[in-house]
Length: 354
Ligand SMILES: Cc1cc2nc3c(=O)[nH]c(=O)nc-3n(C[C@H](O)[C@H](O)[C@H](O)COP(=O)(O)O)c2cc1C
Image (tube, rainbow, N blue to C red; front, side, top):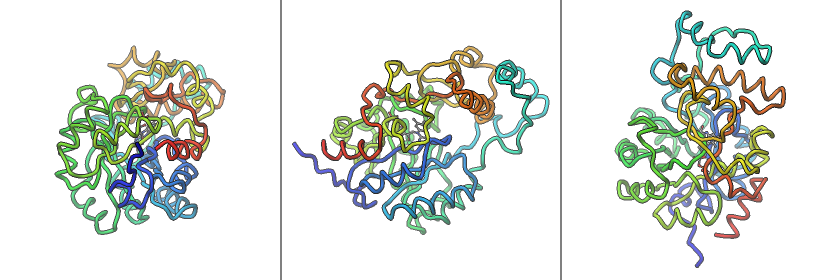
């Protein structure tokens, strides 16, 4: 049976496949990846949560220079967890004790605390609206009514992310245009915002089926989908599109480190785990040293984004030394299904099989 892939979500955005390339934070998104997916008929996305306003404007202009098709820019609404906004000198020095042995291992000195551990959402959103991407997707909360209204006036489609039916309802009530239903199979962070991520773990199949009973808006299924078979079952459950993440970080157009990409095509993908050891927020990836070292100290770690700021420095040093130890090996449970190493081949295979 050939499915009608021209769903209303795709019609609104003028895309001809029910496919969203998941946005990636932490430098894994690239202009080339978003533009390639857009040019090939899916919705390209760029994860911009670590960029400042100028960075956001530059990315949007660069993608627009490569394609006139639709793409989404993605931000994290809650830019810190409780206690993660700032740190006193004493608390910073206490936290440093946790990281010092690893920094010494790489010959790194104690870093100076930054002005902000993470860019402020409130500083990013004006630049985003001004730059006018076709869609604004977001995680970890709901932007204010004023922001959603500005998006509406600027013709920007808003796409929220939910991990439970209650979050779908909250996004719907706020007037968000479409929702990603993100199941726990997904690679990367759990974007929960009502209860804790640990208390919000639902699989994609059941989440999508419940989500479509809570809203008439388009639901985009995410988590554990890596090919046309997965997309088909998401559409059959009532989703209007599927968002693939892990399958795209495996592609050469992404900013994924080679060391990470090779692991994605190895037998190690059979086991992925949920951990707070990468950034302080719950995320899924393949076990390695960063998880082994920090899971055992979970209760002592500073909150997001401060833990992630320290780990980021270790990751950069590990990558420079070409070792995997502190590289966060983000991956979803569908990673053993990965086949394609370029985004154009992946999208072409999905188009052919659908
Ligand atoms: C490395 C990585 C980084 C991610 N960063 C973001 C992000 O910044 N914003 C976001 O909305 N989703 C992010 N995601 C989630 C993906 O966009 C997508 O929803 C998810 O990967 C789908 O599940 P899958 O990995 O099973 O395909 C990330 C996923 C990965 C693997």
